[in-house]
Length: 344
Ligand SMILES: C[S@@+](CC[C@H](N)C(=O)[O-])C[C@H]1O[C@@H](n2cnc3c(N)ncnc32)[C@H](O)[C@@H]1O
Image (cartoon, rainbow, N blue to C red; front, side, top):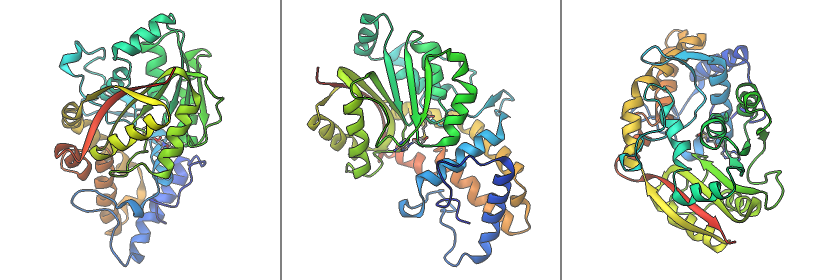
């Protein structure tokens, strides 16, 4: 069982199934000839060694199965923001988010997408009644934050390819939005949304545009869908930590399809600060996860795979000391929040 490649995005794994999956993964250590795919020191996994559909399928089932957990300070919360986020930049004024919220950096990331003066003006001119489409929404935690706190008059369609994440959105967030939030399971390279309906397209840490210095075929399809569903003059707000040399090729490609860069904000330092301040919560989460699954208690093999699982999860969370954290420190990856606009 290779959990990095074998799981399916349309499957919703129960806790019992996860117990079997982790158990089988631990036992598969017996047959590993070339060692682990996970770097023992940095948690890095080579691109060709994993499939994002499998990894997110596992993660969203894991988050759902863990349910309410405790932060490092004992605060109960359900892990729903699959977001690194960033500390609220001082130059943006006081933070709109509670300093005690365990998922405050994720909330910051979503609030920050709407901080651009031009976005505020666009929304105000429509009395707040804008239609937002999010591509790669995960569990919809950010969609919920925006519909409840940032744009209380908007309508919002949140789309992700992962069935479990969309089911979480439908369970946790759709009911309280009282008809203003719809959650759709689809691959955003071919999203089932009509042309020209969105005032604002949101992309927040969606796992695309990850290839250094280039716009991949998937990226071209994904960005093309944004162009198609935006209204003329509509806005595209995008935040992520991606290879620094990928931003410009993406901007060039977007310009070639009629979406122009309006403003670019670099929050890499604040993203590193967030990871430093969030380290205790992430450690506590990883600990609670590995404790829950019996496979990791299998003598010897269980301990080895537990180390793999811990370092891989921590790298995914960009914990200090991991490969993805170091990539922000040396600016191989930069975290930017950008505003673009479709020609009107
Ligand atoms: C790091 S998570 C971020 C999720 C969410 N935006 C958040 O901040 O919590 C990346 C997400 O991108 C989604 N994703 C990647 N490629 C996608 C695609 N082609 N279509 C739809 N979703 C995609 C994944 O399924 C995953 O949920």
